[in-house]
Image (cartoon, rainbow, N blue to C red):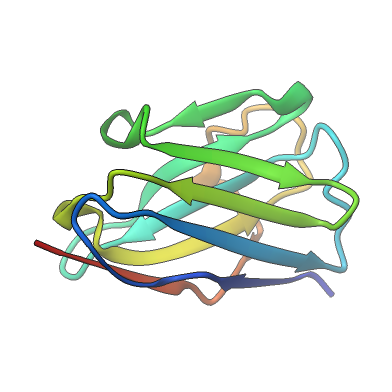
Length: 124
């Protein structure tokens, strides 16, 4: 059974940084398989923040480009999201997601495995 557990969320002031982690079990995050971070703010739909797949190829939501970095440690089956220069509008519940696909990693909304989420709150 695949399990994803996020950690690292919290409250931070605007301009601050946080690093989210996602421990994945029951699933081998070997090179090529797709992993992603998404988020959902109160009253809004879920949006894909970043994905990572084959050869470390990444995709980012325009609004986080240059501020967020997605990475993974295949040996530790862990996904990361480094978030710098945080803005109030980054406030949301952040979810990690995984899938056995090795292509079209940008289709995060079709991923089969999801964590429970970790809250990120950015204040001005």
